[in-house]
Length: 180
View 1 (tube, rainbow, N blue to C red):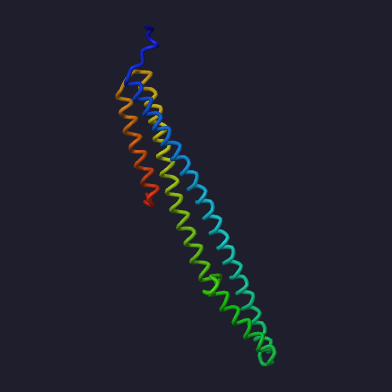
View 2 (view 1 turned 60 degrees about the vertical axis):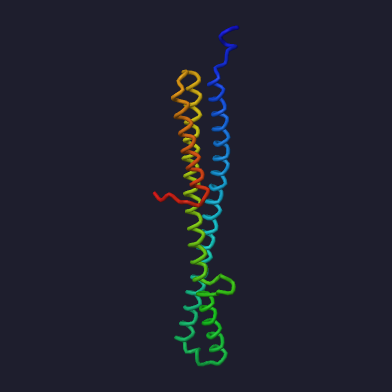
């Protein structure tokens, strides 16, 4: 038998370790991209809500200016103008808070802040999974090097690094957030 035909049984174990690490890497990368997409989605949502808030603020300011202008010009004494001013004042209150639709300034601020909080959570999850992916990539390189160099310690280090990476992945997926 030639030297190449003989396969070291430990190499089979390392090859299986590499296969498992590759599977972990694929899962980690897939979840990471999903969280990255959620980060972008929540950022767009928050930006849209803040833009809506600004539009409501501009409407409120413009309407208040119209009210002040009408009152300063003496039109407030005219019953028709007084009716219009009352309607404008009602609109200003509605611009400020509209709980039934969630589209008043107060409600828009709360919704935008909630979207930003979710964005931050998904961002932390994404980064934790990116760290896990990096660890798994290094573990695969170490496991491969253990076969080439015939140094089993590298395979053990690769396995340990893989376990730590799986821990990071679980940490990210369970909702835990690493602040940093």
